[in-house]
Image 1 (spheres, helix red, strand yellow):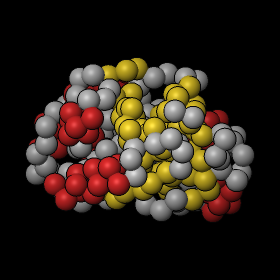
Image 2: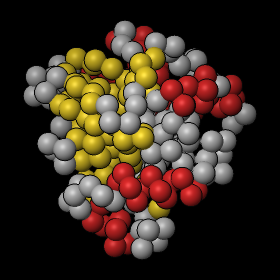
Image 3: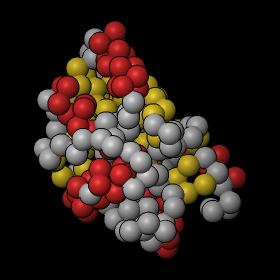
Length: 210
């Protein structure tokens, strides 16, 4: 099961992935305002969930604004590809240029690599390395339930920007073609911004792909 939140002024998607027993992971906690943090906590508590970890699809500041809060609240580690550790480490200072102030993300990091399987209770997420938007960007595939958490690699009708440090357009397109479009067409896509979509829809309608 999966719950979607839209957080901060950049409308970053945060997801809670959870199984029938209530074991869960919090993906890209971009909660910035106290009201957003309260909404996240309320959902966890009302559904008797037990957070086991944070998973960061990449290290841009809008996706890690609530990392310190979530990490401290539930005393859980963060899973991240090591190539994006520098992004996370400088995220709060970089965000300051845009007027955002938040605590530095937790340094309790667990590296995740291409092909790794992350188990969250009865849920298994397979990690695919998808550099291009950032050097360490990943997507997370739940084969059993048929969905893919893509961060900012691909969106409905668009793809991640590549004009920021660590971005590479050719690498991004290679990641999309070899790691995402090769999955079953019925796979539901949950991106880092905007509405959910599917591989079938993007294969036929995304102007960067068609």
